[in-house]
Length: 429
Image (cartoon, rainbow, N blue to C red; front, side):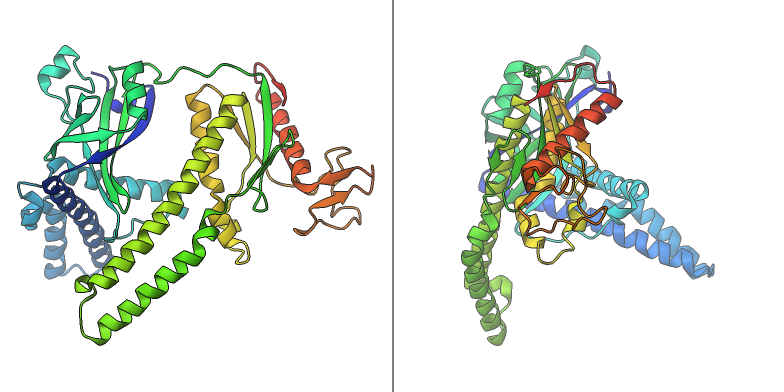
């Protein structure tokens, strides 16, 4: 049987689940154990690193190192709560794999940082794996209806330790209707202030979605904070500013939460037992989640529209982490969701048989798209953020800043396509 990682096509699908009170209790237990396994591994490895750095190999240190190494291999033996009946053993194993994956990511990309402790909050999750019986593997019967994580019908799934759970959504129904023979790899069960969700990582030898029809169009997109984007056709998409619109209500809820926190501490009550504080804390968390859902819905619909209507989409390679260092723009950049939009375009282009290109952002704003002269060079003043419209001092062409940048981005994208010897260069939109 082909391993999951060797399958050529992979996809993630998300659906809402409706667990019972008992199932919610089991989900909370597994989330806590998964978090504890991850944190215990961090603590053990941190102590091992400290002991080995000391360079003192006395007997007590050597014995401690040996004990920690053994504990790391058999956590459930030392922490009995990790092996109770309601705990999914595959969730414990998956937490260990996630910890190792975090270290591998640090070794490859140092900016990601070393694994950090996971803390408990209003949202939590755990991950488990889908396993198949030996008989199913021999018969090649590894389908979404035969594993430990499986669909019972279009409205119910079976999960380890949780049993039968009702589900809802549209994405998984489309996948089941298109190709009912895919395999399930991992399952992530998550809850937050808006409800409970199940995400499945699936794989197959055939594509999950048919490629979208070719349109013969290519577009360049300039992302900005004034408007969300301006493309090379002159289309302007307004910035919805969901966070700023909710900021007044959010400040009010956070002030109320702060007052109740101070009152509970003065009266000597624990915050976990203060019902009014917990109520205001959940209200603030729900508002944050609502803003997040609004932004994601907007970005999903917009990215899908651009991929459907164009064969090639070109964007600047914006480094949001660097831009966030500007305190005057940090809130606007965080609210607009550029990075999420770029990643959505990237995976949807791959999914639907289109092409997504990122180009160097240098001089896309300062360059005249008509004659190629660059502001800030040869004695010409450099454009500032206040300059929304300007005239080129060489060719006298009048430019709208964002539209001019989008045309420059498109030109760079076409040049990059020609360098890559792209088979068909679509015409400009």
